[in-house]
Length: 405
Image (cartoon, rainbow, N blue to C red; front, top):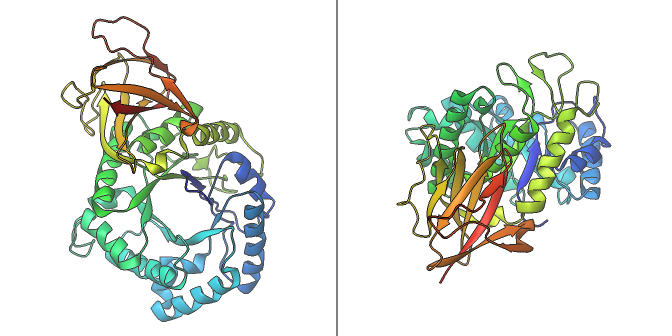
């Protein structure tokens, strides 16, 4: 399967509550590697898992096998030897299936023992099934954990240990504060910056686990905010998004407004998220994973995270005029070509951005449809120009290539 930006989702219903036919809706939604229905891992469960994998393959997607007994919790109760024996039993029954992306390893390890059991479980999974991609979700706040909890390491050192010890080259982490208020958005941007820098230093990729539902104090995202979560994560260097959550709980009023409700019906959120995922995939989903982030700046209010863009930040892009807020990231591809991504970080209003760049040093080209369409830049190289700028709707992203002369 071609490398592309990945969209996943938490699927909590069990194999007794949903059926493999649900996979059709997951693919329609634009998910590329969602979880399967949850199961314990019995032989009977694995017969059903194969049906889910068959459906995934038919739809051109893959699944993360959501098997409870492959988690770090299970390793903590079984011990390493029995965990490996159980994992081998499960793996042998689905080995080589083209619809299988990897196995679930757990959520939010929150103690020294849990973090170490996570390492052990991932290591065993990668040893037994080196071609697969084990999936673990860390707490966003793991970046703030003490050295004692991280085995005497900083978070960056722990991520290096994570990769070197397990052979797993990516992880997911969760952050929901962007769905509270502006103060929460500040915390979200701070988490993006910290995880991006730590992961880059450690040589691992990262996905953001973000909200698709209302949850406790976190409100239900709007369509603009779905796109904002996707584009700001991608601009910060994320290689994927994992949504919490896909289905509402049958009993659980603190989780509501999911894309699929507790009765199995598609909600307004389903269609909003479908448009956002499929639109992003069509425009940027193939090209963004190939780019390496070099730097990220904010336009407007700093939010105490990424630095504010100024005329001293880049030798080609000299100024971005706007009354609204935004995010600007610079990237490089494998051949050394330079790109920049602009995101409107406003939640409710369009933003007008006016670029001032040095046209004597470089040309700037907008990339659409993953580079299949290349448009001459519509900004300005004249500091005194009052020409129309780039008007982006909330959460919209634009991608440009900078070719030096």
